[in-house]
Amino acid sequence: MVTGIGGGGHGEQILKALRLGEKSYDIVGCDMSPYSKGLKEVDHPYIVPSARDPQYVQKILAICKKHRVKALFHGSEPELLIMSRNRDVFMKEGIFLPINPESVIETCMSKSKTFRFMESHGFLHPATRVFGNPEDVEEWSCFPAILKPSVGSGGSAHTFIAQSREELQMLGTYLLNSKVCPEIIVQEYVGTPQMEFTVGVLSDMNGALLNSIGVKRDLSSSLSCRIRVPNRTGLAEYGRYLSVSTGVSQGEIGPFPSVTAPCEGLAKALGACGPINIQCRVHKGQVYVFEVNPRFSGTTSIRAMVGFNEPDILIRRHVLGEDITPRFPYKTGVVVRGLEETFFEESDLNKWALPPRT
Image 1 (tube, helix red, strand yellow):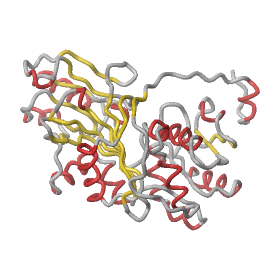
Image 2 (image 1 turned 90 degrees about the vertical axis):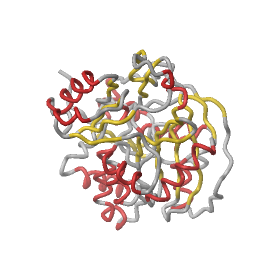
Image 3 (image 1 turned 90 degrees about the horizontal axis):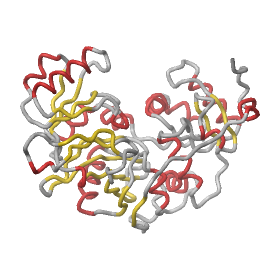
Image 4 (image 1 turned 180 degrees about the vertical axis):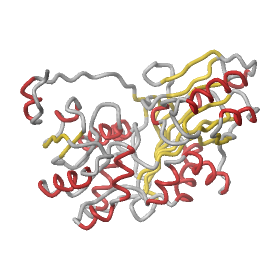
């Protein structure tokens, strides 16, 4: 079963990867939106409440029991959190839950905790501060800088670039006073858009490393670039433009050992058991990590296309009992992405037992 299978999230990516798996799976899928394109791509579609609904866990569990679900995949971060906190409920029913230990999730879902962890364990990262008051932002002196909420901001939501103190003050005041978030991260902007990577490190549920993979992002497309502004700092080391990526990654895919090796070290230090996704840039020959996601990635399906199929591997390893050879081979190349449309007929909507449209 895969939750959150609407377009654009990692639930859709997991669904695509399972369809590319070595095994033929009978897939139950659910989403809280009746217009989720994934509902037409699973064998058993369901509408469920939001992960914040008190009945969410019981609804998911009832569907799992009905279809004798063997493995349950979360498709959004709110669902990851609620499943993590109720993992014993699912495990008692014999349902495989491929999520990291709660300590890893709690650390990585908070950017401030993530950077404190990296600093204390000697991993390179951009200079970072947490601010809760607009007035305190004046203390920052490193430009250009990235501003983003300390929790959330998936797909770079509410993320900005400040190239001067005036811009930093304005953007910081907006984020904090508009109640977008209770505190913000201000972070040193490092490297160039041409040297940005998203890295997947896959460990089994016992913490043994299985493999890693990198995507050297191509940020030339608006699909993959959320912000692109001329560099007005006068510092040539950052390139002609300053950019922030979206959650839609595309580009060159392969092992990139000089980039993935330190990411593997970080996953091990965290105690990862399952998938970890790490965002980083190479700056002055060093890998600087700027985000760690304790979950499946928005690149899960394109990794599966080259033979690095994380959901399929974890099912085969822990549900079917197969031996997975560490450092298994996979293809390298370039993956590009586009848009795909789905049409819902009235008969489709009737299947979800929805009220008539007004």
